[in-house]
Length: 101
Image (cartoon, rainbow, N blue to C red; front, side, top):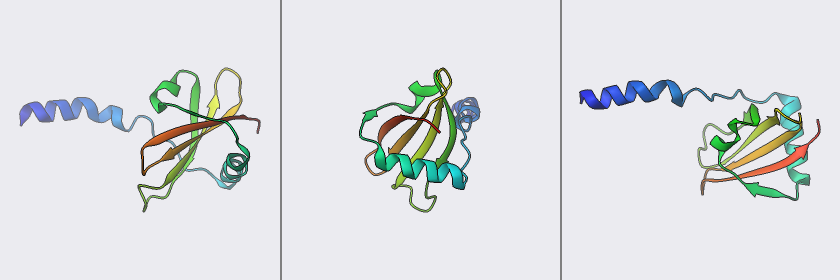
C-alpha cells in the first residue's frame, strides 16, 4: 500500500499540469466555423504537440465523456491556429488546420 501511495504522489502533480480553460464565445464560434470548412485532417498524439503548440482553450460536454472535444491550439513558431478534435467514443484524435484568426 505504501508503494502505491508513493507512486500516486509522484504522478499526481503531472496529471493536472495540462489544464486548458473553456473557450469563450468568440473562440467557440471560430472553432465551429472552421471545423466545418476543414478538408484535411491528420491523426496525432496530443503529447507530441507540446513542443510546437500551445493549448488555448477547449469545448467539451462534461456530462457526456464519450462525446466530441474540440481543442484550439496555436503554433508557437508560425502563429497559426489548429483545431484538435478528440472522439471520446473511439479515442481517436484529428488535427485540422492551419487557420488564420
